[in-house]
Image (cartoon, rainbow, N blue to C red):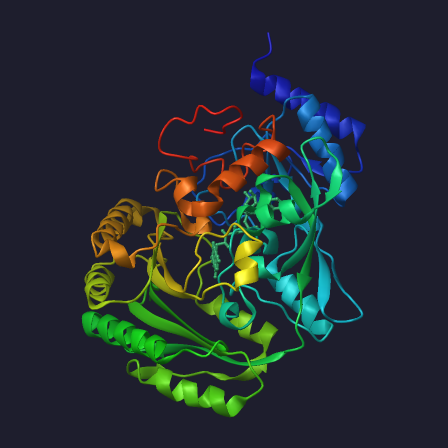
Length: 473
Ligand SMILES: Cc1cc2nc3c(=O)[nH]c(=O)nc-3n(C[C@H](O)[C@H](O)[C@H](O)COP(=O)(O)OP(=O)(O)OC[C@H]3O[C@@H](n4cnc5c(N)ncnc54)[C@H](O)[C@@H]3O)c2cc1C
């Protein structure tokens, strides 16, 4: 008698025979381990197979097969979901990374991109065409996974968040149909990403800017408390005085194995260098600068700076809080916990500036942060196994300390891509758009075929049992 796992294995064997042109690897294949690898290295999940569609038709074939044979599937691009949710035990992984084209329109105002393209390739292809778009900092992040759930990055002030770049999308729905997203579906995709179907293509905005002032500055962090307090209060003062939209300042307090570092990304995304250098002077006064590599260079070269600072993997326990301001009260909590950060390489604490999205972006998306804020990233992500428990405890205490500060300063929403299971609920995250998201989910996924998609796979809709018909709790 076959158990369910054996039945799935046999069914996948049948898929491979029926569709030999769609690459598919099983756990015994030599390429399996490399294809399965994700940012989170301690995820024990063994997917039943990893299938690599080459185009939208392949995705449609795979979805129809999975539905017909009741095979659960998960979609992955960069594999950077911080809670290991893009590899699920005994499910089929649909690896989108071979759908990675980038076609810039002759008007040079928009580009069509494949649903599995990674940020590094996108930036490179756009650079070759003389344009750029808003992207994150790290080249191995999938553009769909980054942008559709929010997409914070150094261009957020000047060009908007990732979700604000999305002009159109082609989606494979649960029936295997390839749809051009209408305005209603696009609104849901801008904030709730792959909840409604597999995104095989997006049309995004592009811009003529190709050169920026950029660099990762290092500040002296030998007196941790004074460094955090002076830097954060100085940053808040600059915000209060009026931060230009072209400016990005993003601090990362990081353990590198060689002590605690304050690495702060400076970027000025405008051709007016004189104004940029004036801001660099002001930002240099946030602490004692040890190293200042800021120079005028290409967006692609600027992205490569992060290879030296961002670890390629981690053992996760990530959390997040979004604040209205860096008050004295929260700065004191940050100083206390940055000082207590366990000394394992990979642990860190980052602050991202979150500007208010434009009114039209807010109307046409479900993104939850509707006002200017600071998104904090608590990275209890040691690379070594021995640091896991201590780091996890530190992350939990740091979070508690922040949540005990003045509640009026804390946004009810949190950034989905950094929100762990059990932390909050979708009604908190989506706020006024929660009912819209739930109705769209029921409309586009009535049989819960996409149950393993972020965020529905691990964030509950509400904190009470949802008994409405079609609920996904
Ligand atoms: C080192 C590191 C740095 C980061 N820096 C930033 C940052 O600067 N700013 C920021 O905002 N976030 C950042 N993040 C978070 C990152 O944006 C999210 O984890 C994002 O979802 C990763 O996308 P991915 O494709 O790489 O990951 P995956 O794990 O492959 O995808 C995550 C989920 O997105 C969905 N998905 C992906 N592709 C598709 C598709 N084509 N169709 C439908 N659904 C899809 C699936 O549900 C999938 O499980 C960072 C994460 C890491 C690990």
